[in-house]
Length: 340
Image 1 (cartoon, rainbow, N blue to C red):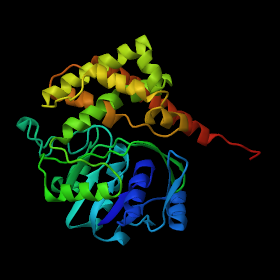
Image 2 (image 1 turned 45 degrees about the vertical axis):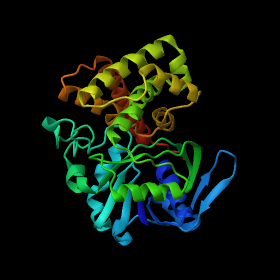
Image 3 (image 1 turned 90 degrees about the horizontal axis):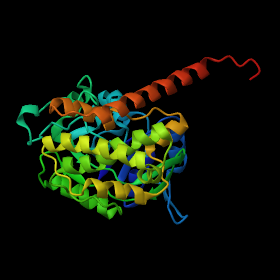
Image 4 (image 1 turned 120 degrees about the horizontal axis):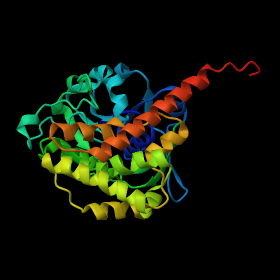
């Protein structure tokens, strides 16, 4: 199959390299030093055992139109980055092109082909698609949902470190087991990636989001690891309150959780001294992903008349953190350094 991976970061780089090594035709949309490195050396994945995989057949460009029609577009950007590239996707779309969305949190398409709540069918989730750009630019009939479980890190241009995990469950928005989603599942499996076909992708989205909306902002605010949060009395209580509020919202939308709240927290604790992606972004001075993970849950709470006081308080504090980080970054850029 012909794939275009939009975003050659930690997840996009990992998936694209694995697909290419399995014989698929892979082109990355990349920028700057990452683009130069992939063009020169392909994409490298450093494995847990110290060995490396080198995908030398991949192509890379920053020009969407130069790629042409593909069988599948994989959006491997963060949620807040998708809107800015939507207008460039059209040249990639052929009659049967699918789009796999690999964003964390509530996706922009959440209420498209929802089926569980006719009143909310077609509702735009403004926290992740404020102007409806994604809804208008990526037709719902092209989309296949995906939940990303692997932990990876872009350690250098064109080089990804694989920390753990290989699961990328896939699901049609209407829950059907279509030929195209089963074919993609098989292609991923051939590449060594576990991509079972789900009959309810939203249930799986919430199961992962349950932890992300909680542990990501708490860790960003406190600089605590997953183990630190779960083993601390105050940290565990705060996480529990947030998860209970989120569960109330999800269940009103027809979601069923296949594990208990306590088991979900215990699972996070077993990961150990792991820094969440949001904490890593804070430490690196990168923009943090708040709205898709936290703000969207508050928005869905408002749509279902569900109170989310703890989530709202943490959201406000995290937004302040993001504002402070951006202000400090601007201030640093504006400093005159006469001796440099």
